[in-house]
Amino acid sequence: MSSFCRIKLNTLFAKKQLLPAIAFCFALLSCTTLKAQFTMSSDSAFNAGSPNTGRLWGYAFGDFYYKAHSDALVRGGSNQYSGVPQKSNAFALRRVYLGYDYNITKKFSAELLLAAEDNFTLTSLTGTTTTSGDLLSNNKLSFYIKLANIRWKNIWKNTDLVVGQVSTPAFALLSEKIWSYRSVERTIADIRRTPSFDLGVTLQGKFDDKGNYGYNVMVGNGNGAKPENDKFKWFYGDVYAMFLDKKLVFDLYADYQRMNWIDGFHHSRNMVKGFVAYTTPKITVGVEGFINHGKNDVVGINGALKDTTNANAAGISTYVRGSIIKNKLGFFARFDSYNPDTKYNNSTFTKYTGFTSTYEPNNKEDFITVGLDFTPVKNVHFMPNIWYSKYKGQQAGSSNTDHDLVYRATFFYVFGK
Image (tube, rainbow, N blue to C red):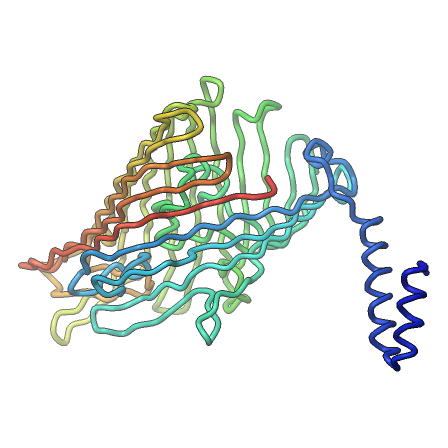
């Protein structure tokens, strides 16, 4: 025990404060021990996969927003500002990450990611409102476990096996990184809540040593961070290829999940998605599109007539981002077009209802965002931008065209990597 602790302990004995003294010295000794055991790892050692090296990292983004116009019918489902009243304004955190990566050995590493993300509201045309997200009952943000997995590196040549809660192949591993503005908006597949993470097992591999060609396959619960609630699994897979020194990128993704499978009612969904981008430090152009086939996913209604039918949702997203002043000022612009049901049949039905909340069938959507990216130092961004979503009803004779318009000052910062 240090002489400082002895002096402090004697003083506190005299004042009949034994328990606080013991706690004080124990904390001091613990801190000394922890300091000896957990020294900070250098980036080079961690990136090289040196055993017993770790990295604490995180990021956060949010905005000050002003909603200039609101859709009168409160459409948009899980869109960021659906249901937010016109002329509302607020400072809001939309995501906070805190992660820790650790190399157990050269062959094994572990990943833990805590996330706090804002709520979103689902409001149907009938006025039914449900809320999902990470707010506590008192409306405070709370961390939850988003990723928790162990990676077995090179289980065979150029292929890793990852077990636990892990990023899916849907977009987080490639297309989201090339878009690079998740702090502004999700990718078009993410907006429809295709899982970005899931609990399961995945293989992440490369067909060549340079990583120009690769694949990701996964089987998971299909329920994100929530416990499994059915007997069906979600199957994911994608393959990618890169050319011209990885400037030109192609990716093909597909998934499948049964959601209900009983006599007389087979309900499932499967997505096929393509992505192509040309990316350089000066300019990046990308296109991402999907078709999501929902088997028996909507109910057509015409008076007393009700019939369950298939629905094909289709979406395409095009964007450009680039540099105006190197490492200081950039720009981005994006346009999405989305049709929730390309099989919409007005001659037979007057309206539809959907089983999947994020694929409400009655309204087409167009999305636009444009903004600037000011970077005073590396990993710190201030981004004034416009967020616009237009809705158009698909019912026969419908003139229900309206929009949500939001002006935002977005901030985004990264630490630890």
